[in-house]
Length: 270
Image (cartoon, rainbow, N blue to C red; front, side, top):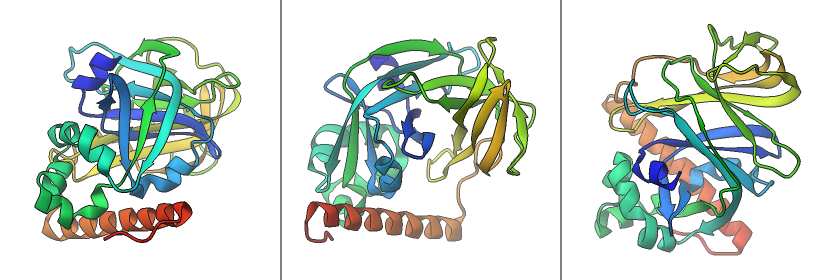
């Protein structure tokens, strides 16, 4: 898993949170030969739901149509707030610069880091032990998604690759799902979260669509939804959209930093 994680540019982190199962796309990094992610503080609300102390790290986007399937590793995680960005800068920044173009623009040099100080504080989440590791089919179509469901008591969540003919957005809709490995879904009314993601070539647009609900038999009963699956890569932003996106990211990161600093009893940054 560490080898796959190290060479991948996109990945997923999934967990069973205080509000139910959830998953987000992440940039895969490595800390002391352990899978790690470094989330900007714009993700503070999501981090706050990580109360179980366990997560599943997955790589499910194939490099090509002929590439092998995906990989999932699950186990306990260490969550550390790096509000000064020092650990991130010293141990992970160079990895992220190589893999993630927005970081290359915002933090490749001291001047850029000072100007974009809000991008450096991170939440560092490291998979400290691989309690479970297995292969799963890769996502190869726009309709393919990861399905996240609670694991056994005290365990990391269960993650499967699924597909569907259609993904209705209306609450109360039902999605017939097929596991990509050919096994039966066997839903028993448990909460579930289905999601996938795609990005523009420059990674300024990195969008996730998702469906949440409960699995019953071979169906997902939808209770909430965002976005729709698409096959084509996202187009880069135009000039106005790029400005608006940058403004929104700055605001979200600064708000998250202020809230995290307030909890820690620190004075404001920037």
